[in-house]
Every structure is written in C-alpha cells, then in structure tokens.
Amino acid sequence: MARMATALGGSAVGGRTMSCSLDAPANAISVCRDGSQVAVAGRNIFKVYAIEEEQLCEKANLRVGRKPSLNLSCADVAWHQAEDNLLATAATNGAVVTWNLGKQSRNKQDQLFMEHKRTVNKVCFHPVELHILLSGSQDGSMKCFDLRRKESVCTFSGQSESVRNVHFSARDFFTFAATFENGNVQLWDMRRPDRCERMFTAHNGPVFSCDWHPDDRGCLVTGGRDKMVKVWDLTGYKAREMYCVQTIASVAHVLWRPDRRYHITTCSMMVDHNIYIWDVRRPYIPFAMFEEHRDVTTGIAWRHNHDPHFLLSGSKDSTLYHHFFKDAQRPAGQAVPEGLCFGLFGDVAFAVKEGLCSAESHRKALSADRRYPFFFTRRPDPTEQFTNVSSALSLFETQPGAASMDWFAETAARYSLSGGPLPELCDRNAAVARQLSRHQVAQIWRMLKIIYTGTGATSNMLSGSGKTGPPLTPLT
Image 1: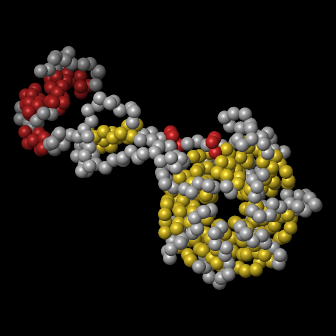
Image 2: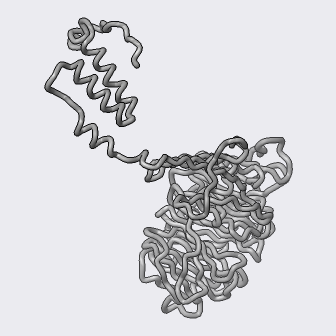
Image 3: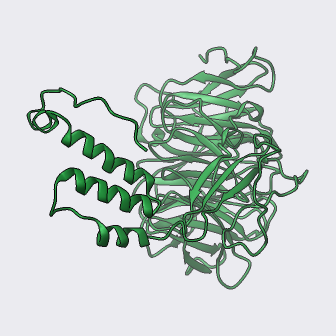
C-alpha cells in the first residue's frame, strides 16, 4: 500500500506536493479525464492510484495471476480522455492491450492485439473517437485499431527505423504525428495509410517525444537525443522551427503546460533526474524545476487538461509524485546578474545588479553609437510570469595609446644584456624602462641588481642555501 504522502515545505494538505512508494520502477504514467486517478505502468508494475486530499492511495492492481505474462511488461500506458474506465498499454513483446476497469472480475484485461513484431513504444487514443487506438513500434510500423472490430483497421509504414512516439492532433480530426529513430517527424492522415502527408528532419538522432499544442493549430513540440527541444510551425508548406531549447541531457518526454501558451515540460532519458518547465521566450534557463526524484524520471502528466498547477511524475526510483507548482524551484531567481568582459582594445565592461552600483560613481555615459553592445533594461510586462532581473553596465576605457605595444619594440632595441658589469646593465635597463613609463619593469631591474650583486648573493642563489642578501635599500 502507498504510504502517507509528505508535503514539502509544510504540512500535508489538499493541493500540495505529495508522494508514494511504488513496488517497482515506473516506465510510464497516465491520468484519467477528471484528474482523480493515475495509472502507473512498468516492467513489474501496473497499478491505479487515487489522488486524495492528503495522499496517493493504491486503488487497483492490474497485474493478477500467479505467472504474469510478458503482455504485462509495459513500456507505455494511455488513459482515454472520454471513457473513464478504458486504458491501453504497450508491451515489450509487441502486444497492445486494452483494459476495462468496469469489469467485475479481478482480471480487467479487455482485448489483446498481437500484430506488432517488436516492442511497442507508444499507444495513443483518439481525442474524440472512443474506439480508435494508435500504436507505434520498434518494427517501424504504426497500427490503427478499432476496438469494435477486434483487430487493426490499417497499418502505416514509415519506411524508416523504429517509431518512438505517435500523437493525435487535438485540432485536426484525421491527423497524427509520428517520430522516428533517424530524427524524422512524419505527419499522417488516417484516411491515407499508403503514404505520409509530410516528412521533415527535426533532430540529429532519435526523436523520443512530441506533443501538439493544445490551442495553436499546427504547432508541434519535439524532443530528442541531441538534447534539443524544438517548437515547429506546421501551418505552412514547410516545417518552420520557431523556438529551440538546449538542455543538458537527452530529452525523453516533452509536454505542453495547460493554459500556458509558452511553457513546455521536459524530463531526461539519463543523467539528469529533474523535471523542467521552460518558457520558450527565454530558453537559456528553466522557468521552474522539480528536484524530488533520485533516479531518471520516466513519465510526466499534468493532472488536468486545464489545470497548470499540478503535475504527476513517475521514476525509476520507484516513487510517484504529485507536484504542486508553487513548490517548484525557480532557477532564474537564483541567477547571478553580474558579469565581467574584456574588450579587444583593452576596455573592461562590468555588469552588476541594479541597486548595488553606487549612485555617486563616475561612470561614463554610453552613447548609441558605441561599438560595445549591451542589454537594455525592459519594462516589466504583467503578462510575463518569469523573474525579471536587470543589471547596470559600466564601461572602463583605456586611454588612447595605452594598449599600444610600441614599448616592446623599444625595449628590445635599447636594452643591454651584455658588454659590461651586471650592476651597470641593470641600471641602464631600469632607466630605459622608466623612460617608457614601464615603472614596474624598472623596479624589477633594480631588484635583480640587489639580488645578484649583493655580498654573497650569487653563491647563495646558486647553492640554494636559503640565505638572503643584504637588506633592501629604499629605491628612488
């Protein structure tokens, strides 16, 4: 049974972050239409949990029987958004299974389809048609099942490597997108199974996930092994990349955040265990993040299609989390607004958070025709929800000719390195350096004279006895 959830940052109350332990690692999760239940599927687990006020409670265990078959080794699970009792799973042995929670018997399995030859990576119900189910497999094919006919009604061949993801469009009744191992994305019309409507290369390597924008028709987000999240405009003749987010690890899942036009939720396939929410208008730092999982996050789902405040996630660490968005970390709020940069001509630019700069500092005003670009402070927009941090830029310029290297040629021509006693050579070279305004170099020549010409200094330096020369005398 699930243990009592623990709210982060306070007592456990309704609508707060909570978690429960699973019997085994999760491979995928899916939420029912009203957001009251979540299905968790994996190689050795297939359960339904009820989302209650203060805890996640186990409601049903769908792995029944003494010897569970490979049909229960789930790679994916999908809950129909029009029928509360209907679920589908994708198995590692190529099986597609539907489940009816309304059945009175312990065994809730409804139908079994064994038409794929390899692992089924993804199952997806049609958003409107109750009986239409789509699957994508490692065998490179996609199959459309009509649950009333007990078999697939058509097969879509991508003429490519394995299918990693399939997803129906919420705006175009007959359209679905499929992503492939070779980095391609194909758009299909269910009425034309002979060939795809359009194909384009989205990523350098496998495309693991995709999701249609809930409001913008023809807007698709993809994520791949190349650590990129890309947003595509598919309304024109050619697919146009609108936004790109660079992450630190392979992207396993991408998901639009409900009621937030520019927010995308992602999790990684390896290395990185966190869940990120990105605002594509500022793609260089996450808008928010959840750090609760201790192993790879394998499934993410928003609790409701119109609720942006509650996110569920499953992981290989055998935990299920119900995240409250207000508990998320905000990396932008911890960003350092200071910076330092050296220019090509010896100038130094220094940016510091406004309010830390002294009001009486004598900073040179920067005119519009300066050759050094800098960021202007933008007025806060009430519609933007991410943190606005502004910095003031100071520019310290070198005097004309200060960056010249003429002194190097002059010293090379006028220095004396032989032809006389060492004290005289040091004095002459110190005078040359002083005339060229290289006062620190002149001081070094005087120090060399004292070190090597003092009483017993030469023998001490060669023997390394540690003895010092005579006391230093003030230099003029």
